[in-house]
Length: 387
Image (cartoon, rainbow, N blue to C red; front, side, top):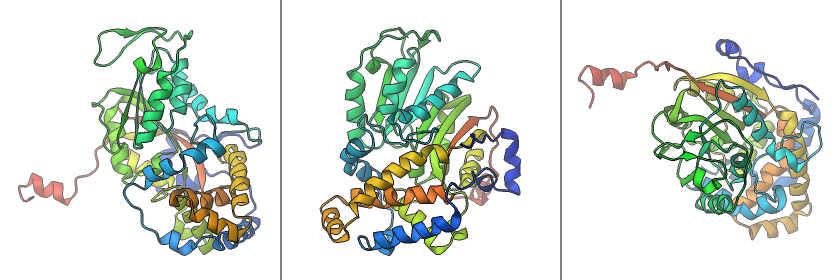
C-alpha cells in the first residue's frame, strides 16, 4: 500500500505553475482504460433505471442537503454504519472494517497532539448524527466542544445521544474555563454539560470572533454553496494559529479536462450526494488564502477509502441488478435516497481512476491574514462614488 503523501506549507507557491490537485495526486489504483470500460458498463446499467441526463441537469435547490440527510437517515444506519457514522471508513489494510470510521478522528487527535498546546475550544462543522462527538468527547475531558448542523433531525439525535453518556477519563491535559462561564469543567461532567450544539448554517456561524482553537469538518464542506464565505466564517471564529481540518472529496482536475463519460460519472456522483458543485483542491486553497488560512498539511487518502467504496458499490449494485424491479422500487423511495444509488455505484471507479480524490487538508489561520485587493466597488466607496 502506498504511504500517505504529505504536502508541506512550502509547496504552496508551486500552485501558480503546477496545480496541487495534480502534483499531489496518488497514482490511480484502477488502470485508466480498464476504468473507462467499467464506467461505461455502470452507466449503461444505470441508464436502464435513471434518466441520467435529466439527473445531471437538475438544478441545485435550497433545502437539498437537509432533504438528502433526512431521507437517507435510515439507510445510513442500516447499510453504512449502525453507530451513526456518515463518512467513509479509513482502512489502510485494504479490507473494510467498521473500526475505520474512527480513522478520521484518530488523525484529528494526532494533529491536536502535534500542537504546542492542546486545544481548549473545538468546533465541529456539520456534526451529523453525533458519531464524531460521541467518540471524541469522552476522550478529551477538559475540552469544550461546539457543533453546528443544518439538519434539525441531526441536532435532536445528537443531543439525545450525548445526554445519555456518562463516563470518566484519565485525560490529563488540564482544566479549562468554558467561554462565558465561571466554573471550570471538571472530570466526570456529562457530555451535555461540555458540548453545545446548535442548528444552523456554517455559512453564518453564531460563534464570536476568535473563540475557537480547532475546527473540523468531515465530508460536509463539499455541500458549501458559497465556499469562500464558509471558509471566511471559519477563519473569523478561529484564534490566530488555530486550524481547520477537512476530510472530503475533490476534483484533481476540472470537469472540462475529462472525457464525456468521465465527466458524466463524476457529476452523477455529486448529484447522488447532494453536492451542488464539486471543488478542485486549488479552488479550495485559493479561497482559504483569501481569508488568511494557509495550507499546513495535505494527505491523499484515496486507497484508504477504497474498501468502503467497494462495499457501497456491491450494496447499490444489487439494487439495480434487475432494472424493471429497480425502477419500481426506487420510484417508491424519496428522490434523494434513490439518487444515492448513483453515487454508490460510481464512486469506487471514479476515485480509483483518479477522477476524484479524497484528501485530509489542514488549514492554519495566519497571525496577520493577507487581505485581498479591494475591488472596484470598494475603491468607489472609498472615493465617495459608491452607492
